[in-house]
Length: 73
Image (cartoon, rainbow, N blue to C red):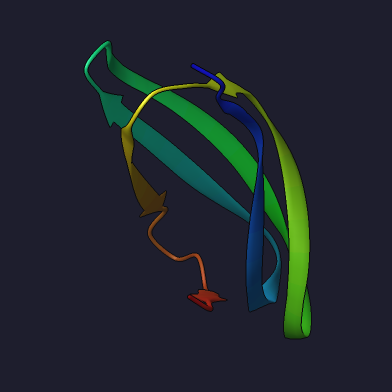
């Protein structure tokens, strides 16, 4: 089964840097990855390279207390 190794997030933040924890849950267990989202006044698309993930996964976005991201669906 082919997987993915990238993620695109469209968002904005008044802070210069925000850490987003990504939690992947699937049949093979759980894994965590981190991405750093740079601040932007306007909604901006950012592409992140991930460690490869395959299979059906539930993805949970965890934001640190004090971070200030606004993410578009």
